[in-house]
Image (cartoon, rainbow, N blue to C red; front, side, top):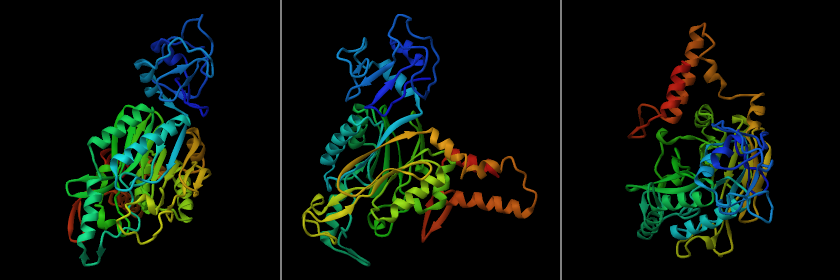
Length: 431
């Protein structure tokens, strides 16, 4: 057992599994629902019988009991307490979807905005914050970069150069700043950035825990005109991270229409599917509900709400002229494993959505349906016919192809694709 972050303003419920190591005390009966790794003795019998501590904004001070006028015996959140919190498997916690406008080709100003919004998320009691696709430095909706088929203008090339210069090196100073923001606010953070690698830009989701940078996912298939400015991802960056909050992954925007990619993520056990997006259409909500219901996972989809004035005034925008004209309508939402809308869709401006995430809902949903079950079932059920064996091999080969294995030609370019080793082993064992 261990601490659990409740919905009430970010309170941790500490039980005997963590209190002795941290120098705290509690009753022998656990007050929250959590899963921990340590089992140590209970605190002093003379200690207060309540184990509830309020974590004040910033995550560095505890107050016992919550709302008390005096501080608890250990007012500073010590290294040991932080370590216990990080090792704890939370069954339930609060998550936030951040719908906001990017800072328009200004990386430093964008990072300052992330810091401010992360502080607001933490003040709202959330342990996880998800930001939109390409939040840093911006999603350049309706900006053509002077491009038509077969020609580029000099002005458009320089507009792209400005976008390129504002993009994010991974690793790099912006990643370090984001890691610091996550640590300062005791947050897990998933944020869409435009990653710069050599001479190519990628649409990327970055993952952070309070302990630092976890990794990234590059969008496999940019949509339509996005291919002019962004390169293609591959199967080497399709992680699902095992965190104290659960297994967290990301599938961005119209990647969610790639059914075999979804199956690969389900097979990896994705419990909290983060879906940074630029799609604000009414139909997007039904897509997110389908993904949640299909995968029996929580889905947090975040889009930007932007106006013309949020992008550089000297770069033409084909959708808007006046500074107050809406360019992106948002539509951010949070969905349960049974397809229920827990928050959103938000369409009235910048907004932070909050929802309670109870991982036990995943098992309740899989009582009906486990979409990845056939991958595991093929290990146990013998295939009695040649037709059945061929069908099993075809299913696995399609999944392998979806996320990229071996070498194949895409157009006229040979592209080396690699599948995550764990999933590859899973698929090989299935056949």
